[in-house]
Length: 122
Image (cartoon, rainbow, N blue to C red):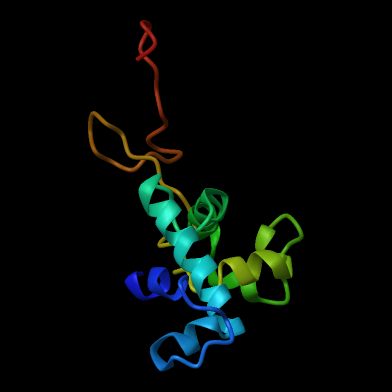
């Protein structure tokens, strides 16, 4: 950053060796990226948009190997290419089906052990 500030004293067509490379066109893109990263750091903002992070969290919960098969139903969001690209590096969900567990007996609820509600609503 000190070199950049010192380069402001020289003209862009300067032949001074330590500062000549700072006036190249690709350096402006790097400088913009540097300022954007610093603003994010100062304002405690993530590097990636929050919507992307939330979408990836949701896609991780529903991503299964069957989402990539040819028989993927249209109701699965991962049948769309844009969602597949977003979920590309994400792991598959751990379970294909959810299971309810009774909080009293710690047994899996099914047709032989249905969920029940007490008169008070608990």
